[in-house]
Image 1 (cartoon, one colour):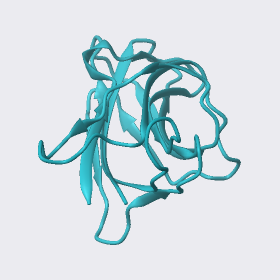
Image 2 (cartoon, rainbow, N blue to C red):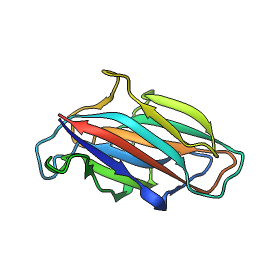
Image 3 (cartoon, rainbow, N blue to C red):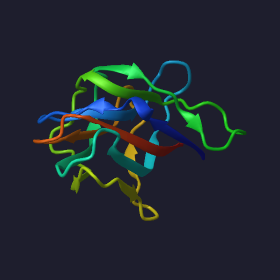
Length: 156
């Protein structure tokens, strides 16, 4: 199984008091056959001016694209083929989030980065259904700078 990384990089996503999607990956029928994916590692943090604010991080299922910047899937093994998934970063219009699909939700101090790694068999799975995927989102009542998110996933 090939493994990949997608990040919104050093540019980050502006954060507000409503959820903003930083990074996402979705199945796509664009250039290859649809493949399901498994997110197994997520890293989140801020790249703005440090302060003592909370940030609420959320990982949920999405079923539509929204408006986003195209990201890059980086193969973690250069011998693997390119990813079939559609990497999405720094949304300007939010994707459709599936109701009650919060797979992960945690509050973290803005000064701290956070990493989640799946226990074996506990990966966050998205189906081989066009535009269905996983979205990494954040909000904050006090922080209005930018934040970053990286997710690692494998395709089957």
